[in-house]
Amino acid sequence: MSVPANSKFYHQVRPGFTGIMYVFEGRCTIGMGDPVFLKNRSLAHLAPGAVLDLTTGEDGCRFLWISGRPIREPIAWGGPIVMNPIFARSLKLII
Image: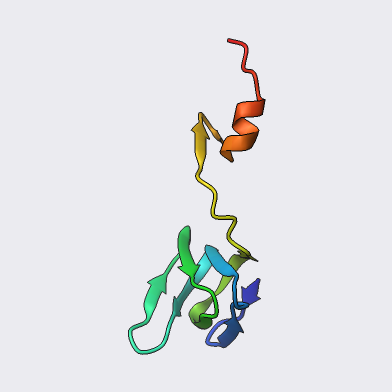
């Protein structure tokens, strides 16, 4: 998403969904009351039903927005690949 310089943007996370925002260009602040400053290569996590209240400065802001239902499964770490444990057990690695 791209928000122009000196602008505001609002988006409500759907109930039951979480949101992740990754800033890859520019700067912005999110939140009301006690805002959080985000710059290039920053990540923010928004809880279900939260409101993304974003304000840009003179640089504007470009970010990736990902939202979905949490699957609540543990993470199986395996080198650079992350998968859920059921899929991990089905793989046979040959070294």
